[in-house]
Image 1 (tube, rainbow, N blue to C red):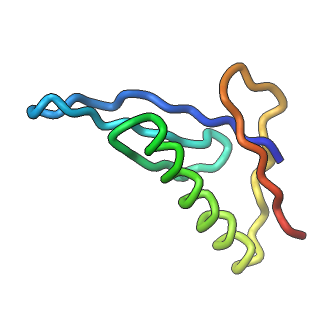
Image 2 (tube, one colour):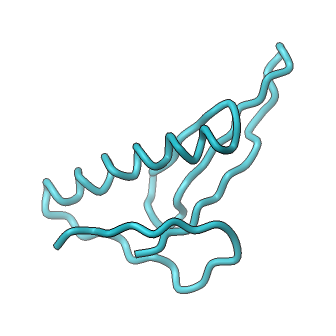
Length: 80
């Protein structure tokens, strides 16, 4: 499946740093953060693996990917 990846600047810290968030809109609650957009997306990769493993372990359905994406996407192979 191919899931959309949404990344945005969530806030700027008082020290001048940034906090970026990344999420998969099709996977409720599947989100991560990082100091850069790249770190947020890398963290999201780990969170997504745990999210999908949890669904599989509990025999819960895997949400379908959206039909159309305008931005970045990531291809995920979900075992049967």
